[in-house]
Length: 422
Image 1 (cartoon, helix red, strand yellow):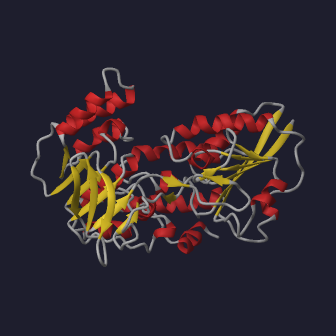
Image 2 (cartoon, helix red, strand yellow):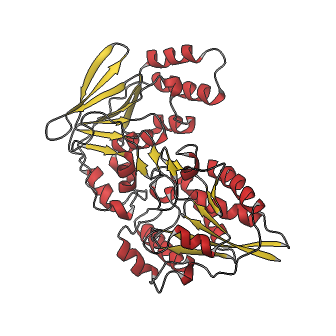
Image 3 (spheres, one colour):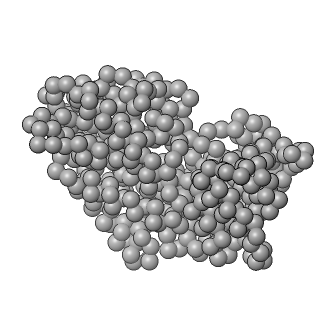
């Protein structure tokens, strides 16, 4: 039997689905030992630090990840950083194949005047803050104003808008980070606008997310019926299935009665941001619309217009993603997920994407190397393996159970390592 060593950098959905694809290709003659490296003390990537806390069903995919991780030839190396602890070149020398699955974590910018004012944030900072990402434990989010504007027309923008607009007590039974929950409960925000540059027919929301909006118990949800009617006209008589599903859901929202709640989320279409205005902090946003320029007063702006990948030494990047040919970067180096294709699709999209890349990887394998593995490179640095992660995971679940939550996340890196026993 030929056994090849593959190392995956990044323990998010793309990384786990790449591992699963390798496991699915095993035969009596072909096997794989899989090492997964993760910078954070915890795995699961955006399933842990990106999915909105009030959507726990989406997070259930972590059960699939745990099944993948508990197979005999899989090892987790969390709390290990690429660049300072190991390099891509070193991994390429040790392994038969290296798979980059680091995702896209840096929020894209609008490039307009005022974007750097205090009170102007990126969803790339805001979302991991409320989800308990260690790098954002001390991030400051000013919710001391009455009106917030979210700029973007995808599910991230909707998540951000919803988190700002819902009654904070609705987050009590979720795994929202404790520090963020405290800030949400002190929030003065009562009106949230979600603004899209193009018409509703071009919005990148998904219909399940749209259909969940009317379920908000303490928040008015507003879409202008003429906006949706115009979008339906522009979409034509035979729109794509996803577009029709979205517009049907939006039409239902546009028919909702204003229930007189104190909190409101309102969607603005065909609003192109021209400038973010203010002296010492955000005071308003000026938009170009079909009816001319308008300015909306607000104290907080969060942009959710996409992500780009952070650079890694030794890997070519172009337009915010790894330069690749259908997943192949160079030599024995491959890429999957958002780092490969950009921030598109849902979590499940990564499964078929990874399977295709892994098939290409396997087709290019030659004689297995016998050059050691990542343990030779760590030089005594303590890492969190699968058993240590399971200890930390069990702790979070137990602490959550005490207060009626699915888990209480350990946010500080040092504390996470202590609980994990390293």
